[in-house]
Image (tube, rainbow, N blue to C red; front, side, top):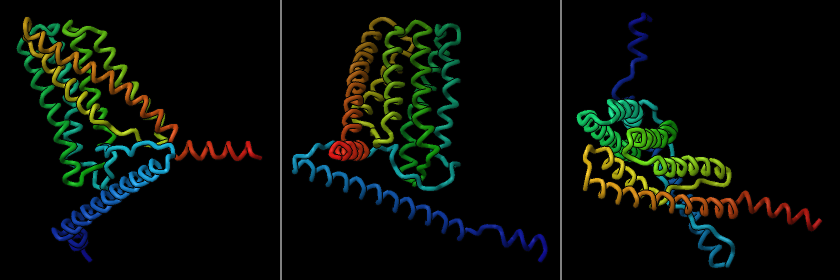
Length: 268
């Protein structure tokens, strides 16, 4: 067999590519159905325990980050948008901090880059779930991209004097603290995102966008109203996450088994 014949035999055909796409889609649908069944099972267990008067913890709302990975390549459009957002972070920071943040043209450029990055945050998640492109890489990098963008915006606004450092400190301490909290209870279960958390992210993005605009005077009143609302939701959801983590740790299967073992040792 000649080298040309071997290369021709190894070359994938359109039918091969179509079969791979169909297999990937079927695998994604299977994993999604398994995740849905598991959620229904936990909800049924919750209802049973509540009816029996046993300690319970409400079944978590489905979290986009907990969507099953589809096994597709990391080289896909959803992950490309996530990495594009990460690349935009230093560009955004440079535009914001150039000339001390007092150049109107650069400030408007920073606003446009921040808006583009915020829009891609919504698009990449929708693409990943609708087209079966969910990957472990994407689930890891997406929140990193979000926190990098928000952190750069808050720190940059404080550096140029548009936002007090205490506001930046409150938000960053909350974000870092909740990330560490989620990691600390991961062996007991996933601490899913809440609706309040999503509202917090939306309000923060709007407030930061308003502070980025090179407009002073009466416009600052609107920006501060939105920022104070974002701060209130940020603190409230942070406290809510702490209590949810405590309940998750107390009522998890791991904790129940540990208490059962201790009770058995005491009886002995």
